Length: 208
Length: 204
Image 1 (cartoon, one colour):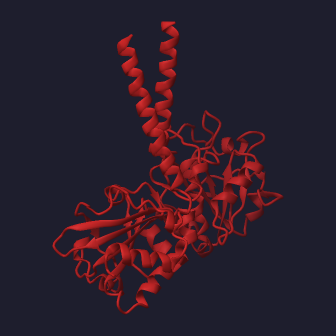
Image 2: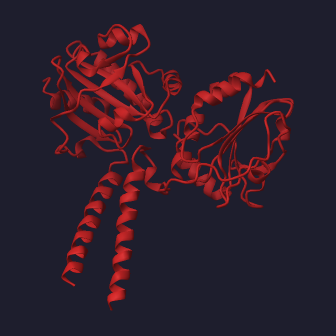
């Protein structure tokens, strides 16, 4: 009886903790659709081993896009610089506030003749719902969002950014028109990379 | 046994209190209709601490606020009786969605000869760099000064929990500043919002 009671108390304590933690995480999030965002505690900043280097060739891939069809890296070769933004997962706090910023920065990408490819390990229906919720109806998502769902995280793994829990790192790769990697930022998963740094990397992309 | 009971009551109390605060925060995240706002916010009509903000970069923005020089400034130095602060983020879709509406609010104030010198507006970009705030300004042609709050120090001081948040402050040259309005989410009708601000601030 006593043991049972203790267990019950522990459960209560846990629920109190979860509720309080939920409130804490909600702080600083953007309004609008944040009620759908899954609260995530602080994670290990990075949790993968680098496989690629600046100056190396970016591995090709061919992934299904939310808008339909497939998108490969090689289709941009000789035509566009490419920025790949891996984010850990749909419906998580920081990612939900990263792509909306890129979505209003098309000018920055255009200026450097670059396309952005957003990649997560989620499946297409999840990405469809998430990106639809994320975007301002007047600001349609201008860049392809790709699903690295099956085989699970295969592209993230090729790029050395698949974490042990099966989600991608928060990572940015800049690839020039020759298919060479000019910038890598495997960021602290808990923080949003500054747009300033990506802008600086794009300034240099055509020089290499 | 008695001790256990006490502990249980305590835990239940905390659980209940947290649930209350959470439901309040969730409710406020949707667009809040002006008429439904919580006017009895305990933080309202109280003095808020005096703090410093980085001086806007352009002369046009400085002259709008009646400021000069470089470095930092205090809200009390702004040449106005009422300051409306839009707490926003470059990355916040909801802020992006309402950007044109906030610009319209600025326009409406400028069109009122009796109010345009009394009410001024600034935006504070939570966790945004100067570059990100500049990008937001360019993207939405924001006509009022936008100030970055990179480390979220200002927004924490203002008690902000999310974006967008609208704050009304009565500016007093003597250094005290009273918050009379605090609303999370947004407003639906610009004219109604302005009327409310004028009324609550005691300007009319």
